[in-house]
Image (cartoon, rainbow, N blue to C red; front, side):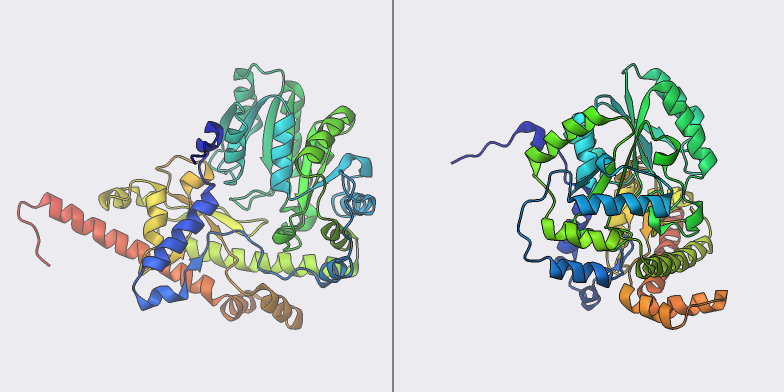
Length: 452
């Protein structure tokens, strides 16, 4: 019997993160070198390395027997806890009725795009999950490239918006930003919000990394600056190292009662409600407590230490430019200085760059520019600095928090040797690339091939 798949699904490509994962699995099954058995240095996958907070784990165990369906918007106690969490950490006084819980922010963003009319504005570089959703839903969209500082400007946003004739536009705004690790300050948010009000742009503000902001007091939510037009999404995956729990939430704008009603219909139709035991576990995670404060403080300090090390090591490599992370566990590295050498070696796309870097003898995984909604010939790459045992590092920090630069360097050496080795491999890769390219240039300029 032949099964016919809907053309809409046929046209969708595998998401870049899964495509990369498939490539890695296939490559290592084919690689014959003994060195392939150790795997690869992982700068590609953005998963927090830390343990799920113990109080969250315990709450999940205690609620394992709760098999009842939850209310579609979420368990009431959880929505109250999320409201208090936002009031305490983000200084937003949000009625629990404005909060809906879903199976991860990825699904909630998809649900919002389902019900909201309008052309989508997507700043680039971008998290690799946004564009596949936009395409799957057949939404009209326009890219909004960032400037050299890797942030969008009010001027560019307004200029693009004036070209769009929809009554309503949708800006997907990721702050703190994946892949750059940058954070928008209050003034920048206010200037963007001013354009949004003027141009009737609603904002889906993906703030999943908010709690990872290194200088946490500097983080400001777009929901506080533009409450009447912003949908704020957040969840457990990054701040609580609980991606596998699949729980996120959305805060609706003020006075968006009808949108909430429509959203409820979508949730009830697609998945009824988030797993009940997981929701009760999340209550413990979102309750304000000294234990959670300490967990957030230590994890963000370790992210900062690792990010600073990766930033400094990449900056030591001639020709490499990077963003300096202020949050998250990523930075964006710019390798475009090597474009002539890439081309001389027939590496003409960022995808090929990623593929050659994972091959023997380098064994290093990154996410290349085309996966970040950049041009295929943009040799930028997202570098995730999470390839270490997070629980071990957490406990070591608890026992002896590094105070000086040399202490922090020793902390990285002790707790993240794979990050160090991976960066050394990247340096080796570019040494070899330069030598190979120069050999090619000499060979091509000579009438007689140069022998080895």
